Length: 87
Image 1 (cartoon, rainbow, N blue to C red):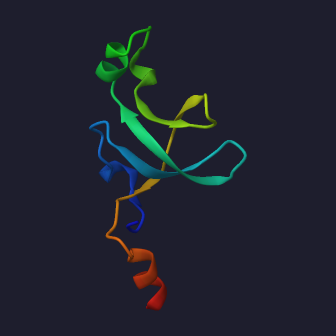
Image 2 (image 1 turned 90 degrees about the vertical axis):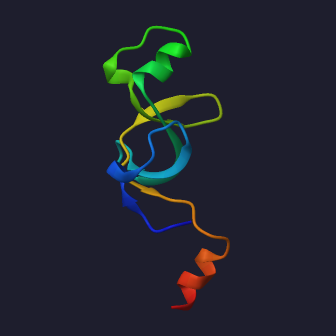
């Protein structure tokens, strides 16, 4: 896994990426999330508006929630964690 970067640099093309976000209890979380534009949401059906566009993540096995991540980790090469620990 790559080093954390600002969320503004994260891909917003629908790819799932690892994001870092803080929940309402102040707990920092690292989870897989996907940016969904308003167009993507409307194609899935239902009623959506501009406030629904953004980063979505599963908070349990059945529930997705819109989150406000502050960073993301780009995928790294195999073995990156080991190399970082040796420095």
